[in-house]
Length: 308
Image (cartoon, rainbow, N blue to C red; front, side, top):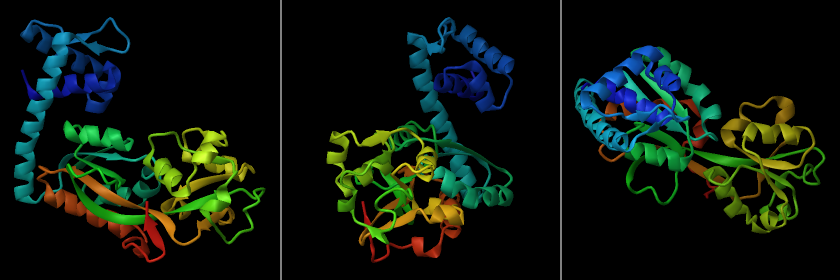
């Protein structure tokens, strides 16, 4: 029984697919399957029911996988302690990032980080907040970049920056000519909103008091912020976008960007880790790289902004 075999069964359990698990582990599917089969023979039990699609663990397999997760986490802690003693920037680092943050933040610092630290194997997954928290608890990821929420006391939270929200308004909207827009102006407006479960959506719904819009079915739920922006550009009402997204827009697109009336709703972006996280050098590097990649005015909460 080896740590590698345990890594393989956790990957299969995560993806419920042998080929995807092999790709994640960066091995061939025959190699991964053979190693898992060897472990099953050693234990004289089936860990996965291969007859089901997607692949599912057997009742015994569920117990094996749970224990393997604990073993791998503790084994990883030993490596982390040694790497921290050496102050190194190498090894595997798994990061979860919100879908409303990743496409706008990662391109600003990630390529440079990879060039600076070629020995660092960074694996990034876009995940919602609750999925990041769950993955941190079981050691599936090392850190998460999320919007700060009040109920995160079980984790260590390192502030990164403050990101204001903006409205993206179609030229056909009655609000397009306004310099700033008040939340009360949104009454009766047709909005493109993310699905429930996105903290980006939930924060703005609360701030803008959009319950009436939801009840009258004037809010539409799709799933992609980029889709909403295209709808607005095509002349379809209003959506909300984060501050970093504005920096990527063309001159024509920026004409559709409107500010909220003061105080402007803002989210605090933080780096989330477990309280027993030991790779402080690694965490400090991530914090410096992220903070160095965003506009300086985002590093502090400005007077005209309010956290939501």
